[in-house]
Length: 263
Image (cartoon, rainbow, N blue to C red; front, top):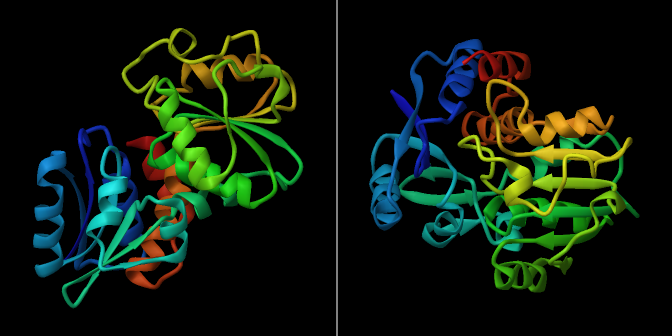
């Protein structure tokens, strides 16, 4: 059996196992499997090295391990190195290769070029780094807000962009929430520097949080006729890139979308 997993803490909410197992079945890879493994931060490095030495092919990495995934790797893709975070590991002959598929996944979802646009990224973790890197690299002017301002300043020093403490919501062409706000049902408008009434038509609003129904953030954006991209779309897009790294085969996107949304 060729084994894959998603590593996180917590990770029980992840749709990746349903999505990736559906993809493996669609590809006829019956001797492959994918599971979710909850790994505490102080156990992450040991777990990854055990996997690399065993019968594992690779793993996705989610909160809070994207920085640690970069540090444990023997080899880094250029994108992962530039972003400073990894969300995909590939094990070959005991060596650990790290990639970042968040960036490419997001780029495939954007409806048009972001060159010359203004963007606001909420958060300063591993997912935020991938989003900021993608937007800056493709010509957007990016502002970054984080509850802890030091982290947003450090991110901008590394990748570009401008840290902000009080962003003007209506002034952006794109707003991306990369925080976990909303994952447990929190009110995003009490936790983030946004208001439900502050969205405007033709804005693009991306929320990396996903659930069975539109998040409160995206529901408010839709009411104001903003364009939206939800977290499940992002999950499928980045997961498809990971799957190709592991298997070398073209990912069955429709099967992945159906499984992610019906799980």
